[in-house]
Image 1 (cartoon, rainbow, N blue to C red):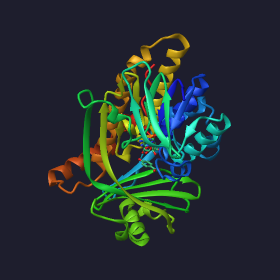
Image 2 (cartoon, rainbow, N blue to C red):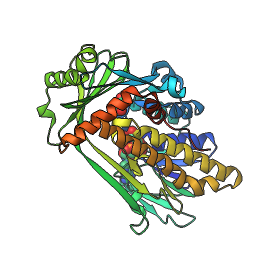
Image 3 (tube, rainbow, N blue to C red):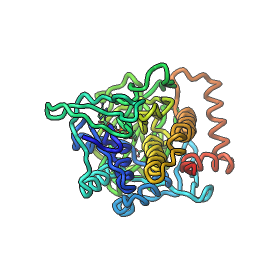
Length: 391
Ligand code: APR
Ligand code: PHB
């Protein structure tokens, strides 16, 4: 097979890139390891920065998002037994964010792919990248027991943290940066009405978060030990911990019910540099991982793909390669900004096992400053809402 851009991975990054390239008249083939339903069954992120909303809107992917998503002017923080305070993103930076599940966004992307008869190969095994430094890179894979090869002008790895693309960048070139956090998040989904706002909590027992997917689907998280497993967390124990950590006022508003999904995820930060090697590019989780605290993972995938589709369009439309040459540097500026912000929010809101009394007081002092300073809240608001894309 032959195409202009070969994309590995049909998650949010790969399927959005394929969609944006198609709108620019650029051909692509997407090769995905899992089945379509397996990708759609994943429970992942739920917050879209307004910049991400605008990318999806410009790409004609906004109908269901506008109909079923929920626009928020900010989010609340609760800590130290005090009343919650609201970080008013609209007031501080004139922006918003959208609660809209990644699963729904993925459904929208696949629906759009079906309309255009997109070339997405599911259940492809043994995907490999070849000759990334040549002007004819290719990928090989097996599907249905048949060996296939796609020759392309460019290969883009949108294949997540465990994908095949990043390893095609030699260790002599690739630099990676990692940070593991000494706790996990236990998340549940329940068919109950959510709280009106997203609420982040710092409590002596640990972090908690109240979020949502739609008016009858709530998403909640509590910080848990990395030694915990799901058997340690009955629904009763979860609801008791969640409402305790949210405090009596906010916790008292929570409508409890049976969990329809429950999972534990570790938290880590990871960045790979550069995000380009010859005619191989990497985007999304293939290049970076953030703790979910700042809701940046999906939004960074969207911003990488926005930059890369703009770069490839400029190349094919007019032979202008400036955005391609600047992709890695430009994407990494936004990645590191979001990685730092996610680290900052995680450090601010969680209880660390090795935390000293000094650390505890310093954390409380920062929360006190955030609660009392409009400047501090404005700084958090503009980073949570997402910084503008570079032109
Ligand atoms: N070959 C082909 N496909 C692969 C391979 C491989 N070797 N390895 C992984 N994949 C596929 C996965 O099955 C997955 O569907 O690549 C896709 C990567 O998708 P994501 O992991 O969702 O990453 P990305 O598209 O960058 O989106 C990032 O998704 O995981 C969440 O929290 C993350 O919200 C963030 C968003
Ligand atoms: C979610 O709705 O899953 C969610 C929201 C905000 C976060 C993390 C996760 O910071």
